[in-house]
Image (tube, rainbow, N blue to C red; front, side, top):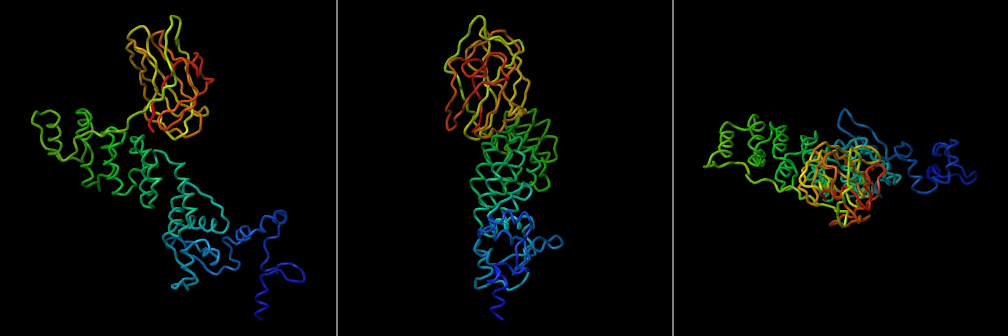
Length: 439
């Protein structure tokens, strides 16, 4: 009898066929794919989420929203030391159903699919829950894949939430990436919905951050969303760094400050004998912008550089993730002059940032910064297009002896001509001598 039981899940000797109850699927598609599932990984993959020969079941998710998942102890034990101890250790589980209320069913299935097949399928909605499951059951490769996914999808609107989670999961590389985004795009990050979803300790760490690239009025506006539970964290906001007008139009009219605090702030701005404040008085250092200069010299001639509504444009790529904050432009070669300017940043034809503004040049051959409203994240090894349309003095300086590759600190830039340029700017000469960026 034992021999018969042992032979039920092997092909019979006489026919070389599987017994019908144990046979893999035999559709036309699987017959064509037969060589692929002959490997151990492919055979294991057929058993994923399969009741056939399952010797354990998990009840995954909170009560009322759980899912029963079949599994095979051996497959899980060889892929996770936690499951190995759970099934074969001194305190091995003997229950047929194992309850896991703290893991989402979708995340648990992603974990199991990886353990059965080495396949990883991550989605934005479940990647954090999957990271939690991978950490809980010590599956490092899946955890690393989750972190890589989060790093590539990281942007200002989710940076604060991911900072909180990266601290929880003790992922220092992801934490550092979050800080890069939060520092450079602080105003966007603080205004995001995710800022109100972080834990209180992460909130205090952000408010203590010296390199936040944000106006203090924006910081105060952001923490107002935490009013009910703000507590002493309010006194990490550097209220005295606001201008008097910013304070009067914003913080002074909020319900966060007491009458005495508001009065003391007005006296601090206006009185010779300033009162003692509970708020830090020094402004944040912020980030120091870097400049990539692509020309080796500049010049001017009596018949150029003219504008008349035409576009100057150039394409660039960087080998590291950076944040473009603005452009450095040449000004008038005929003395002090004011220019109206429209600047634009695009990738593959899609506009990422635009701004209409102006700047005043003093007649020198130096460059004059023009800023986007917010710094724009630039992904590595992808070409972007910056364009400028100037309106003002007919003649200006222009660059010459342009370089196709420029090393600026730890960042290497490459430049190439843009088909959008209708005013003569290219790699070798023209306008847009500088990219202003954070890295």
